[in-house]
Length: 249
Ligand code: SF4
Image 1 (cartoon, rainbow, N blue to C red):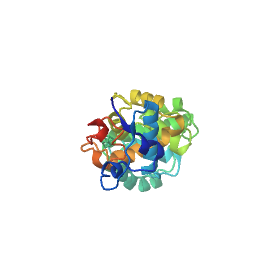
Image 2: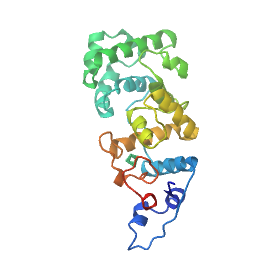
Image 3: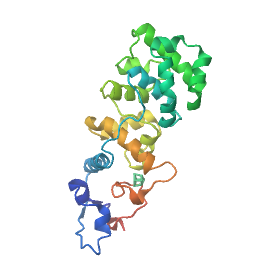
Image 4: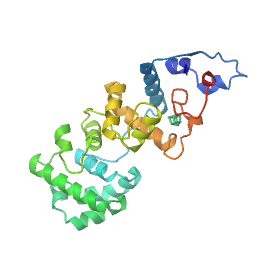
């Protein structure tokens, strides 16, 4: 039977490492099983405490800018996207301007973000549709957003949640997928299935912030090549943890 550190998770007043290393501290260890819902609650609360200010790290001022930045962020770091977008947004301030841009010029402007030919094609085709069918405004509805070229649920969720404060799903990028799998919240590699699993596991009020915090966690602790379980605040509620708690030994 698997046990978890109940005292830490539900009260949040005691650190696991203090208690485990607590021979000298005379800490009282209390272990008991917790339900999956309680475990998810512990994960949510600890991520909230560890990354209270986590938010979208792409720079934008309008929904259109966020849409374009999110398309550019595929297979690229947000830092690199943020280095490119100030000039890009100044050169092309509207959907109409993106739509009318010579393709080669647009490609050159976004080249540092990689896969620039496809990205330029998608941005231009999406902006054409936005200009022609949505009066130049990025649509707010999921169905309209995913009808835009180059826009799948991940990008639509980013735009809806961060530009329109409307949350209909969970943003699933590479960090959210990997960390959620390690946490046992999904077993799938398919982003659509991962999102469905997370929507079933998490309260809707947590969908947007969970993604922001897991992205931060995936960048600094639960990294793709190295999961630093020894310093992870989730290491006693994570089935992939390489740190063995006394209750599991
Ligand atoms: S315990 Fe390890 S595998 Fe689990 S979330 Fe933390 S760093 Fe990732």
